[in-house]
Image (cartoon, rainbow, N blue to C red; front, top):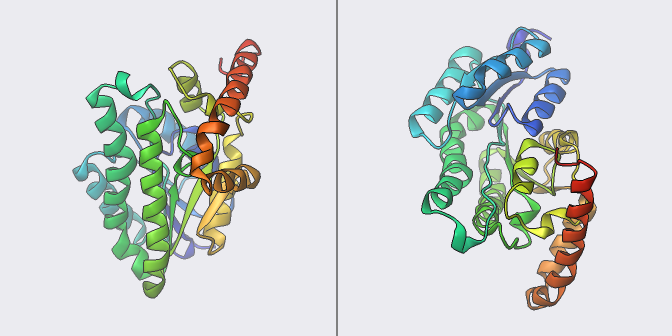
Length: 274
């Protein structure tokens, strides 16, 4: 396939575990990649991108900054002439009880997870309309079921889920498909960081999944018209059932929290978070 005919993916958070696995998979599928992450990640990300082929581009972008996002979208279109798929993968987490969070930590999560994602989506929309493309947004199972000690992170993921579902319906009339990915806990630097903080025991109910599982979910989203993809499906199903009965959460939570706390201590001894 010639370079001009290859579909183009704009991927945020490309330096992380999910980002790299997604980039690898989509490169294998023949996509041209425009990979973005923070400036401090650029050197390592460029080395990684070189292993995928010579045609991919790495561009520094802090999605919390409007100027960075605008420059990145413009550069992608300048280099490749189009955007077929926009994958909003970038996000951060600052686990802690709400009363212990600083205002800076609260604002940071909202600026990156919500405002940054929405802004980039707005900037990418004209190009997705032109290509009749695909928008993929990374939410979380914490965007279905509340997560104590992750209150702001959970709030941002609830927001992204509502945003994606709204666009899923709204954008049908313009021919742009929208899907959100809702994974459970993933084996990643973010999970290691989470384990070092006052994180929710709910995050440890099930063993962390490899980031490749999320990458496969993103590929599935690109290929289908599903509104939501749960990784894994079984956890997503349980989360949705639990939220049908919010009044029961106060009864279920202590039981699940004890299980999560036991799992956390066991996995910590086994070096899962090392």
